[in-house]
Amino acid sequence: MVGGMVFVAFPLLGYVLVPVTFLVLGGTVGGLVLMPVGMVGFHTLQRQRYGRVGVAGFWLVVIASLVVAFGVADYFIWGDPLQRLPPVWLGLGLLGLVVGFVLYGIATLQARVLPRWCALSFIVVLPMAALALLSIRLPLAQTSIVFGLAWLALGYALWARREASAEQQPRRVR
Image 1 (tube, rainbow, N blue to C red):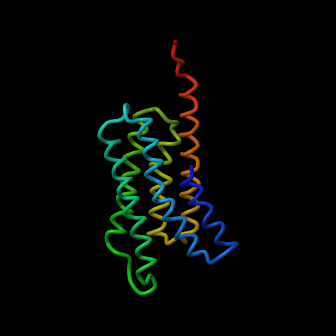
Image 2: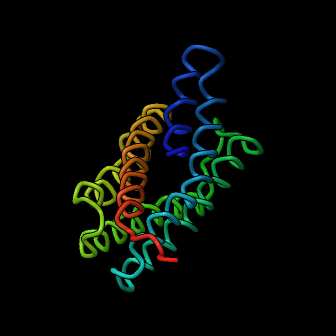
Image 3: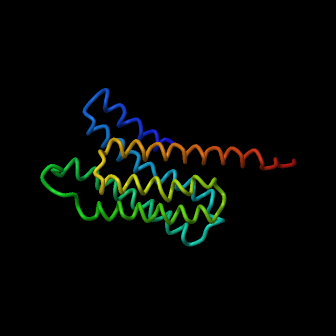
């Protein structure tokens, strides 16, 4: 949930306080660095129920999110985004995110641990936000907000599922 808040809050604050580019950049990099933490939560919850597809999707998302976070920070801090194209590995990282989320969403559908909308969010919303950034050329702030709202909803579903399973576990008898 924290990653989703970072994705949403930084661009929104950027419209009010300082130039949007710096806050959107910080929110994007911060959210991408926190994304593996959320994925570990989903993996812990479902790892007994999904097979190789889920594990492959999990690791692909974790590695690709860190590659994209480093690539975005590197491109905007050390590079010259107005004069040169981003590095190839940044595009490969985005492609890895899209493929990883689709694989993980399929595994989530098969595991039937989380609500169906969570799996559809992995399959549709998150990859479409990443692809919209590349193909439609939506501004980074709008894409970050959509991506962050999806992560907020997924984080809430994970938190609610954890609370429900904690209440169902019997206490030890002493």
